[in-house]
Length: 239
Image (cartoon, rainbow, N blue to C red; front, side, top):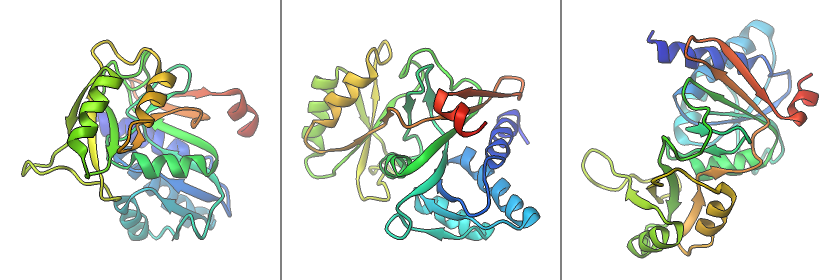
């Protein structure tokens, strides 16, 4: 296992320690979350606990079912105890950039439906300024996406790139939408303002800036050691 994979395993298994019997859990998307799913399945078997997962992508749902984790939908399970997800960047104010895996819209909906949100990240993703090392994903409707791209560039003061697959065709989300990956030359100076401006553009379905949707960050540092970053709410909740 590579050092990067090992660090993802560290935080994935650490997140599983917060799971209790009977919990309704939002299951994020991505390679780091995959380790959490594996740890969760092991915990269920070892401790004989029962949980229900609500998935943020078809990819996650397929893997959860393969591991024997029961899954539901938000319609059936509208209130979640916790959500566990990865992030592309996290800053010191617990603001996030998400969407590298293309599931940002569903991830934000699930996070908003959760009592608490645990974010699991590897080394290098805890940053002083969002957008300094990762492009900001924005999910947009296919209809008129060229016009939307122009508006995003002008109003967001960024350079949007249409995400594509190997064939050169646009990447399509589970919702049937496209994604722009937006470059900010000097990072995102004001995440709240940027989120507000981009969200108001016609054709934008969701912006990959997550605000007030993170309570606890579990980070694996460069040496693979577990580092916890907690909000006051999380310190009380997980005491």
